Image: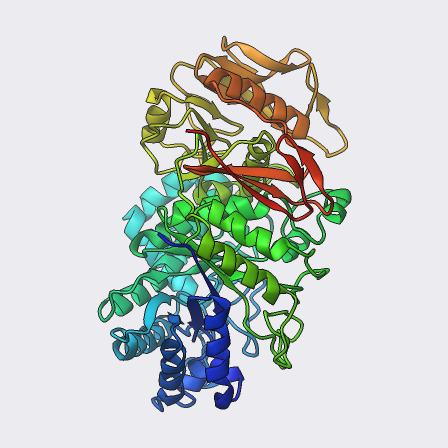
Amino acid sequence: MKRTLGTCYYPEHWPEDTWANDAKRMAELGLTWVRIGEFSWGQIEPNPEDLQWGWLDRAIETLGRAGLKVVLGTPTATPPRWMLDRHPDMLALDAEGRPRKFGSRRHYCFSHLGYRKESQRITRLMAKRYGQNPYVGAWQTDNEYGCHDTTISYSDAARGAFQRWLSERYASIEALNAAWGNVFWSMNYQSFDEIDLPNLTVTVPNFAHSMAFHRFSSDQVVAFNQMQVEAIKAHSSAPVSHNYMGRTTDFDHFKLNEDMEIATWDSYPLGFLEDRVTAEPAHKRAFARQGDPDFQAFHHDLYRAVGRGRWWIMEQQPGPVNWAPYNPAPLSGMVRLWSWEAFAHGAEAVCYFRWRQAHFAQEQMHAGLQRSDYQDAPAMQEVAQVAAELAKAPDVQPVQAPIALIFDYDAAWAWSVQPHGAELDYFELVFQHYRALRRAGLSVDILPASTREFSGYKLVLAPGLMHMDTDLTKALCASDAVVQLGPRTGARTRDFEVPTPLPPNVPNLDITVARVESLRPDCPIAIEGGGQVILYREELEGTAKAVLTSGETPVLVGSDRLFYCGAWLDQEGLDRVIAVLCARAGLEIRALPDGIRTRRTATEDFWFNHTNAPVETEFGILPAAGVLRLDLKP
C-alpha cells in the first residue's frame, strides 16, 4: 500500500474565495488526504432542523476537484449552544459534581440518551448526504474521545445507566454484594437503584465498585461510537476511523475499534514531552525540541495493534502547540523525522495539523503548515521534502517483530483503582519495558491481552496484568516464545478479590507472592550486579530459580522459557532483565547511542537520530534529526 500525506482543514474558518487556492496548494505539495468537518455542527445546523449543507457541499467539491480525498468527520465533539437548551441535563459532571459547561468542546455525557439520539441523527444525515460522494474517501467519528478528561461522567444520566449496566451483568443484587465483598463496612445494597457512582465518598470507595465503573464508562464510549459507525456504514463503504490520543487509557481502544477499519492517532511529540512523558528534567531539556525518542513509537505500535495492522496519524505536530506547559518550536528536520518514523512503523498516512494557523479563538497559538497570514510556516518545506521522498523511495514493507509486548486497558484501570504507591502507573510500567527494548535496538509489536496466538515471536513480555485470565496464561505457557510476567500478575480476580491460591499462580513456575511493599522514591534497593528496585517490590517464595536478586530477595526468577519479575526496576535493572531474556530467546542486542533508535521492516533498517547533534554509528555519521534507510542483506 502506497504511503500518503494529508492535512486537517477548516474551510468554515476562511473566506470561500480562498478554498480553491488552498486546495491547489495542497495538491501541489503532494498531499492526498484532507480531514474536514469534525467541529462543524453549528455551521451545518445553526438552529434546530435548519440544515445548511451548501457550504460543506462546495468545500468537498472544491477539494475533490483538486485531486484530494476527503476524510469527513462527524461533528459530535462540538454540539451547538441550542443543543444545551434542548437537553439541559446533557452535560457531564466531574468527580466533584461540577458541570462541564458550554464554551469549549466535548461538553456532553456519553450516557445521555437524548444526546445520543441527536448524535445518531446528525451522523445519519451526514452519511446519507455524503456516503456515495466520490470525493469522500474515509470517515472519522467524533474527535479525540476522552480529551480533557471527558470519558468519565458523574451525572444523573451516568448513574442510571450504570445501575442498568450492573443489573445486566450481575443479574441479582445478592450476586453483586457477594462479588464486591460488600459485607465489608456494611456496604450491602438491597437493589441496584441504591448504587451510586464512586465519587464524593468519605474515603476511597470499594475497589470493585470503582473497577466496575471504569468498565462501564469505557462501554459507554464504545456504544456511542458504535452507534455512529452503524449510521455511517448504512450509507457508505468508505473506511471508518477515530483519532485517538497519547497516553489515554480511560476507555478500551481495542474494543472501540473492533467495527472500524482503521485506527488513527494525534501525535504531538513536543507537547507530550512536557505534558505526558514522565522523565527527569535533564531528559526533557535534551529532547525539548525533538520529543521523547520512544513515546511516539510506542503509540505507533499500540495503534497499529488497535487497527489490526491499519493505522494513520490524523494529526501530526508541525510547529509549536498551544496547550503544553512549554511550547517550543521543533528542531529543524524533526517534522520530517516524525513522518518517516511513523511510516517505518507501518503508518498508511501522516496528516499534519493544521493547514493554516487559526487567527481567532482557543488555538491561535497552535502552528500550522501556513501562518495565519497565508504565508508558509517552516514545516512546509519539510513536508514537501517528505512528499518528494515518498514519490521516489520504495514503499515501506511492514513485518512481524521478533518481540511482543502486551498492553491491556483493563489492567490500566486496575492500577489506577489500587496503585498501592504514589507513582505506580500501569502505562508507565509497560512504557518503561518498551523503552528498554528500544534501547537495545529491538523492534516491538504491541498486542492486546485478548491475543491467544504467539507464533513467530521469540520473546513476549506481559508486565502488570493484575487480572490475567486462564486462557491467556495457557496460551503464553504453550507458546514457543520466552515469556516474562510480573509484577502484579494475577494479583486480583475480575471482581478485584485477592485470589486463592495466591498470585501469580502460573503453571510450571513455582513462585508465590508472599508480601508486597511500595517504596519511597528515595529508598531504592540495590540489585546484585547493578540496577535498583524502585517504587514497588514483591517478596517471592518458591523453588523457581533466582536470576537477579536484591540481597537474599529474588527479583527475577525462572528458567528455560518462563520468567517472573517481582519488582519495579530502574533503567539499568530493566536493561539487565532484557539482556537475560534476549540471550535466552536468541535475540541480538545492539547497544545504541543515547537518542538513536531503529525500526526494522521486511526489507530495511530505519535509523533515527532524535538528538540535536550528529551521532557516529556503525554505518557512519547520522546527522542531527537525521533519518537513514539501510537495505537488509538478502
